[in-house]
Image 1 (spheres, rainbow, N blue to C red):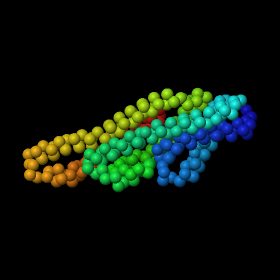
Image 2 (cartoon, one colour):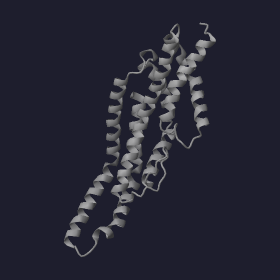
Image 3 (tube, rainbow, N blue to C red):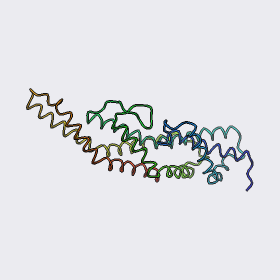
Image 4 (cartoon, rainbow, N blue to C red):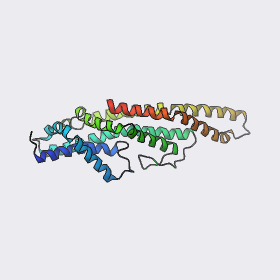
Length: 251
């Protein structure tokens, strides 16, 4: 079917609104270390790639509609993209929050690290885990699943339905609970270790009040936590990648 130039530009603009909004917050793709111009070019490239597949879905929504409805579509598509990107970022925010808790449990919570995906500093352990998780997204080719999820979002969230704040808040709440449950399950071994070792130190300190057992035991607590992290880091990151890929596949 012949397509007018104005319809082609409007269709590409609407696709760019959702894809660009998603890329603003999606972990890895929205990294502040990547220049803004590069991220913009990537969003343009993805828009042009998905354009032949999605134009037939978007075009009937705006053709023959007044300008005011087009403005609503632009705002709605931008909010939909931001919502999708924020759902993915929630999982990484939950992971970073629990890594700070791990650092506090191991007495290494000095905030001298650098966050891989944000400007806020993190403890060194948090920086290592969050950076490894972000790199694994690309190493496991999950960035292609992000594109597939964006394409599938047009079937689950049609542009003509406009943005639904109530349903979006319900989705954010569910994702918030799922993300923190996953992060808590990942950090559970370190938390259990911290509770047991500190309980044991407290008992020893009661039996020998003349000795500053707490200060003497700090290096051993840190060493034990690092040894546990050494043996469990692969399973921890693998479990997180499974949860993130499960969200990308099934939403």
